Image (cartoon, rainbow, N blue to C red):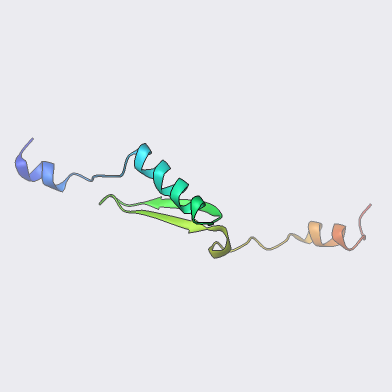
Length: 69
């Protein structure tokens, strides 16, 4: 492997770094919904309020309205 190949190799963050980032986010009061890791080692924590919610299905809507048995 050449020196240039070692430089260009992606350096994802490890499990320990990810676990620490999630724990720190939770300590700050965030409701962690997910995370994103980049090849440069960046970890992005996504909070539940920032993640779009799935629309309720027609079945769930009808059941909530009492139209289904």
